[in-house]
Image 1 (cartoon, rainbow, N blue to C red):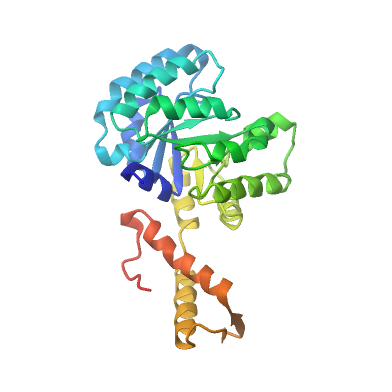
Image 2: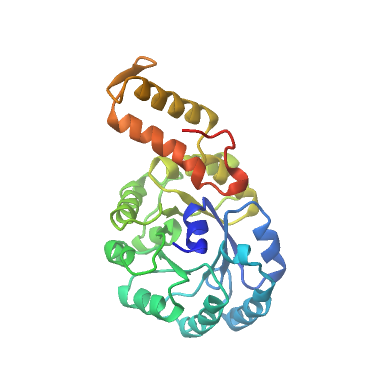
Amino acid sequence: MSISSEALSRARSFLFVPATRPERFAKALASGADAVIIDLEDAVAPRDKGAARDQLSNAFGQFTAAELDRLVVRVNAGGTPWFDDDMKLLQSLARQGLGAAMLPKAESVAVLQNMAQSLGSTCALMPLIESLAGFDAVDALARVSQVLRLAFGNLDFQADLGLACAPDETELVPVRLAVVMAARRAGLAAAIDGVTIDTKDAVQLQLDTARSRRAGFGAKLCIHPMQVAVVNTAFAPSASELDWARRVLAAVAAAGGGVVSLDGRMVDGPVALLARRTLAQIRLLPQTQSDASYSE
């Protein structure tokens, strides 16, 4: 795994910034977000697509190697009038160390395979599942070379199917589970969940991110810097979770690996595995967020 792939595999928060706002690139990288997505797609009006590519190209030299490891560029979807020009730019950016490319409306294995071939082995891919066609192809997309993580576009998926979801998006539970399962079957890093559109509703953001974590996602897309801290905190083990995990493993060790009782509850193999995974998450956090007191 390359350094960039490792950094993006660990990332919990992916913050979007429009390619037309190069003055925001450094601010986004300094926001606390684990990764930054420079967007050539939804955040850029059709008339500004060419200018957006030029602005990104001109600003790309400002990034350090460490920042490139955390950087993703979202292109326009395959088949759109802008995709070919986006790919020409991506080829140049990949040679300069771009961490990953995100493909929206990912539906075609052939398009994703062509991206992998043209960008080279050092640039990871992140297909964004946003339609029924993408959902139907999710397992095949997940297995394409260089795919690092799947992402779920909850808003576009609703639009594609004509859904009118409640705020808790209960209607999308089976879809989210299928995306998580596809990532697991392909041996990818944990999938990335979609956005919370109300940037001022911290309570809804907390609820959404807690749902994402319960569902098996490992990260979430963010559309405002104010969302980053909430998302990072939600995907990191709490102090009480870490304490529980350490006590579980200590009890198992004291029992010689057999079944034990802790706090009135049975601790067997699956519980011990959960405890180990909880502690392992500390090692997967960005260095500045890691728990210095960790010990197994």
